[in-house]
Length: 105
Image 1 (spheres, one colour):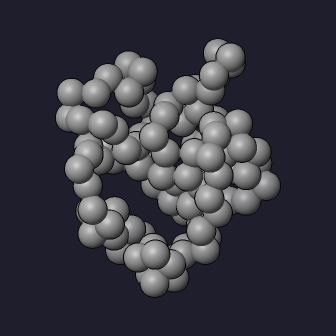
Image 2 (tube, one colour):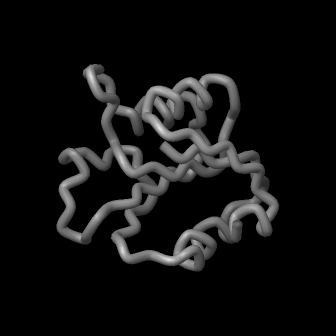
């Protein structure tokens, strides 16, 4: 809800493949994800999302600071360990001018 109040159009998706599909259709400014991989695919989800939206900030949400996030954070702009609150995301979002949406795999 806080991201909507900041003027973002939110595009929620609940799987990596759906996130990639949305990214092929829309140029995003901000992408929030909890995974860096595409199950059953050798490509990096973050790499593919970066190709589709090269100017997007990509936030990776992880269970803890020690989380290995599949060993690959290339292309990730920021890593937010749990517990996090909306204000943590908002602090990063507020630094970005111009908004178009957020896929949430």
